[in-house]
Length: 318
Length: 213
Image (cartoon, rainbow over all chains, first blue to last red; front, side, top):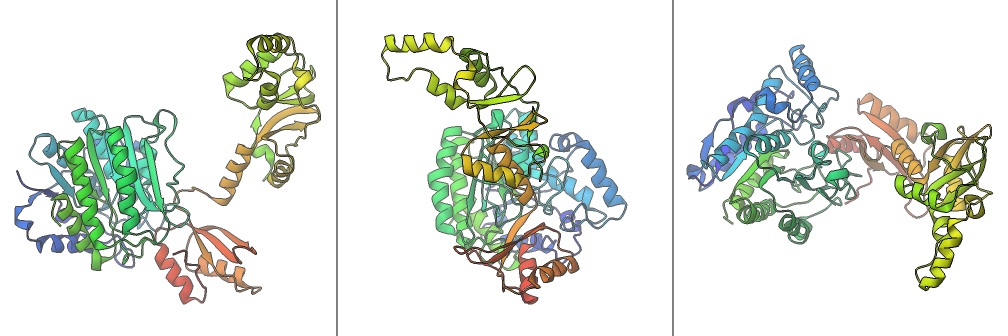
């Protein structure tokens, strides 16, 4: 079996956000691919194309009214939906379905034992998307669609999503917060200072889901040391206690010091440590299986090396 | 900003002649802490709180025989004997600010809302925090707070708002705060993911951004 499987597709470049100054641009994937191609282990990686997510699975995370509205807005030639941040082009609906489909392709590979460690390099990202609303460059919640597929098709009930993007994944929290058999852990910049203004430490889940949301906000300036401390002292013990059946990683790289989409100050190297830590969780709880899905990360000068550092960490390499 | 928009309407009320065990069961069953007490005409005559009830019931340090005596007495006690008869109340057209001042002054957890002598609602500290959360947009999805230095000029508020509108930056609140401890500042709740771009644009236009790092 290959060390790690990358799921990506040229068609992801066709989601047109109008180019700069919009930060969520196709060049993000270019720079990531370049960095991975330059790595010593690139030839050992398996590369697979995603499928388009079937409507049934999109509806497992989204309201049908949103699917109709998204498709109509795109076809009518609109340039954004609801907010100028959410730029769209003519292909965006299809490409968003292809982004949501990557997780499904990945889960089939993981469940058929054709892969242990899969990283979906997709755009548009997903963790801000709500059941009926786009938010913050996100249209379909790729992580939530994947979680539902894993639960319903393969009976992996206890899904844990760990999100290390600089921003809180409001869409994942909304989907999970009333459930006892899903868990969402997010380390992000404090919501008073950062988009999307959600993810307060006090939000811990609702009703049956009480205790299944763990928000770990960092003050602006939060750095490697604070992240590692949280991983060791808070996140790892929480996994030990909850013991997930499956791990989905919302992998965002915009907490890097050079990325001005947040005030967090991570180094490139921290992504290697995060990858290593996640790998150790997978060994303990999920028979080594990990599904990572790309979220944010916008500073092109460091995005490639950050992703490469993370992938190295997943492979157990320093 | 009026209480009528934020209160709980048609609250559960009790009659002054209700016996304490029944009142206690109501508070426990509904997880309430406050019950307005009204007479047969629906007129407010007092407030009963879980604290009043706790004080009426026997203390855990009493001996069994002493406890039993207190229990026997409590079971025959009417609400009217332990309620606070001279409680303060709001009206539906009281403002959130009125309520804030009253909570601050009297340190209670909830107040009845009275109109034409009748109890029409109850307004708690929780309702107040929820109302202010809504007013200030705390936890509103897609909104972020940013701070600007206040140069003290008479036109700075106009300049900020004009700038935001001209640049088509969605915003919902502009708050000028004068504080001896924190210093003066102007706080904006803007609705965009591209915060860094907005901050840079603000600085290019002569505003000083408060950096929290």
